Length: 132
Image (cartoon, rainbow, N blue to C red; front, side, top):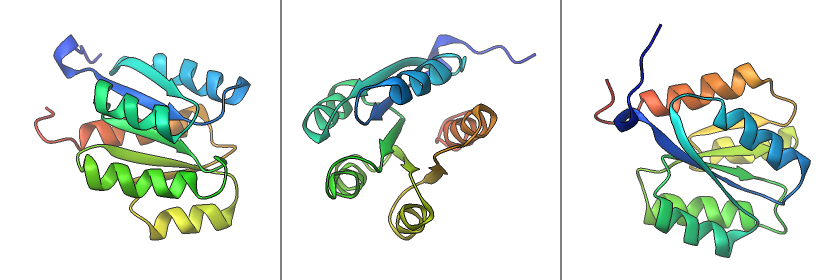
């Protein structure tokens, strides 16, 4: 059994349209003992404000945001906050390929399991400098 203290916990941010999908994702992230808080944002304006204020370790970006908002957000976050790890939630294989060619730290194609989400988040958290 791994014991996790509060100083090892990190926060996460989900940027995507409100609804059942985002709520379910939030619940799955909150079940992870290494995540202390899960923030949510509907769009890039609120998302950037949340990144600046909450300083999350992980940002999950829904590729279904209008236009190129997801890709613009990814580039902006990686440029402004290089330590923030971005996971793209891709809706199809074309978006998955686009994410892999961009600066995404990980890609999850919609339909992924809770176990896959947990492993992806754990790998990202454990890759952070200063992590035991």
